Length: 320
Image (cartoon, rainbow, N blue to C red):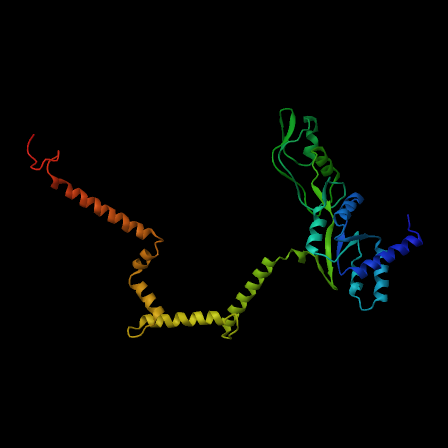
């Protein structure tokens, strides 16, 4: 049912108000998402974001008019995104928090005939609950089965549907027989608009740890290139100093008439590595020395015992 002029005017005013009030927005896709699911999402986003859906022609026209009225505004780039079953989620808060709410509201759904599978569907082996009279149905789908305890049992996992393919009537019927709902549908994030910048929603997957790892990898690459070219940079200077120290140390260890404190430590280690191993025993050396001292004391006590006389303590050790 087409909207009346009053409703269209209200919609345009509402859209322009959101474009003015908010600096951030998600462009979302709502394929296979029901009205109840959208309503639940609105409730969870209350106080954090505003959801706006509508016809693409109306949204494009509204954005175009707003861009003409506000030439300095960068929202004109949103017009090209109004393709397909899309909508807008406006916010001034944390994009990560809003994203978590949007992606958490998903529901399982059966495989409908003609629908494009978003994921691969693998049916696990085991009893199906179908009577032996339906064996021909499984044979049509080229699924290996056997009869066990009066019911059909699949003998191996079956890759039934491949992602990107359309679901056939036989595939949908099998999943329905097995009471399997393989797909989940929810609001899909397509793009993010943030203070005039437009980027793919996958950028939000980049965390601080990912950035730190990428930065460290880039610094390592710069250092390698600088060392190979012989061109010093802030990234390569620490490595150059370390390499120079290694060269000086190796030359010093080869000379008998020159040394310095650090070289003396390395020279002593090369002369007797076992001394350093004993020193770094983590307390085991002290325990070993204590044990040796106790053994020596016991030996001394054993040697001194016969000096006291006979077995009954008599001085002369005579016969009974």
